[in-house]
Length: 342
Image 1 (cartoon, one colour):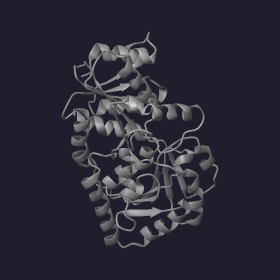
Image 2 (tube, one colour):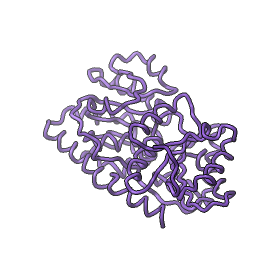
Image 3 (spheres, rainbow, N blue to C red):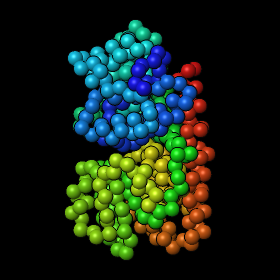
Image 4 (cartoon, one colour):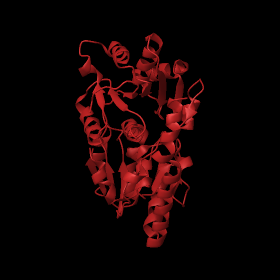
């Protein structure tokens, strides 16, 4: 399965914990493999990379860990050597580190291939990553094409960039019959999980389930809210999505979160703060809820709980139909193929 073929499409990323970028790349690979040979290139293996690797194996996606294939090369040299030896047709980078390395390889390699970078980060990073992120943006002209998963991200790139939607394979998503109200995502500042204790305090009779791990986990666990149920990180969320009836997103910054697409693709409405591309996705009161401040999610949850079964069902159908019509692999993969092979 892992034998290289000439003219493959390579999706390159530096994957640690399985998150939004990894989910996007996995969906993209699953859709592309129907049309052309595709391969995931992981720059390095990390202790937390195993979840991504397991999902690639489960979906029969060829992958290569660059640091293991070329153990005596530093990452830039290993990538350049891999391109020279195996001659991909397209090298599509995801995330700032992969993007910088792929652009460098594009400029220094004798081989001919199309290099594309997708910008995913809706938040403005801090520390050293801030400078790498800025360097990635100001060198966007070095790619054959630059893509961004939201208009806000697109506006931060000083060169021509095209917006593309995240997407999901709706045919593989069974409709949920669950009742839980849940948060699904990384427990980091930009995702806003620190709002959850206040929301649960204002809704003492409502349990809110939290699936995820991250820097704010210990803060949430010390909140003392009996109705905030912390499940931790789940490597197989497919097992838990069927239990969820309403997803809440309280992010301070976003692109177009994969969790929202996966939820709505399963007929789970989303109650979210109006950040990133979420206002493009959600029509308030029709296929979900949209608020300006995270604290306003309380009234959304109350509205959901007081709706009749028929009213909930209508919102669920609207949520799923939104994804089928505008955010499914059936619409996005053909568009991506045109970008690869212009």
